[in-house]
Amino acid sequence: MGSLTKRQKSIVIGCLLGDGAMRCKNNALLEINHSFKQRAYVDWKYQQLRRLVATPPKKRFGRNGRIAYRFTTLSIPALTKIYKKFYLNGQKRIPDGLRLTNLSLAVWFMDDGCRSRRAAYFNTQKFSMIEQRRLIRLLRAKGITADINRDKKYWRLRVAVASMKRLKGLIQPYILPSLRYKLPS
Image (tube, rainbow, N blue to C red; front, side, top):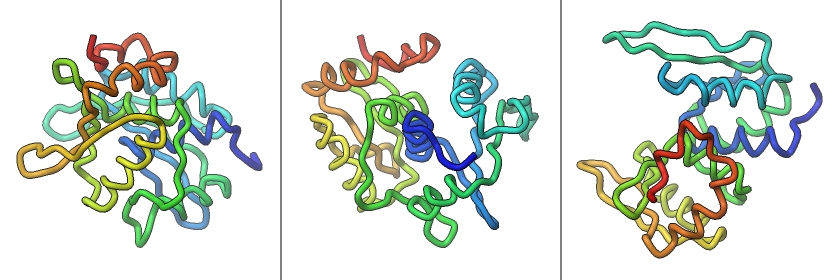
């Protein structure tokens, strides 16, 4: 269990840009937690990270009738290295010097992407304005133009219509059939 494969690292980074969370005592673990309706997606993540996981995904009943489907990885040094880049004082952040693979971008989109007519959004409301600008630079490095867009009282990223073909071309090979509805046609 020494290190992560490139594929596993790309998936972990995509998860952390999206809905994934890490915890760390001596070593870090990654928690994957989605709605039970996204079971196929959680199962896919589990299969990709299986070597790092002791217990398969399970249903979890939450407040207000929400049913989640989740798993956690083992606590390992390879994840601790990533944790130290993405977390400061227990708060998730976007680290400097981050590079996106197409797979990381696809996982991030499957976690936090949504369509709106001919454009797409990344629901980045949890990140600060500085971090959102960092995310825009990451997208620009992939040839994708995005801007910060107001979503009620929060902010998120909107991918320009002119960049949709580029975004789709990069991520479509990785998008699971059950999540293709997130891509504009």
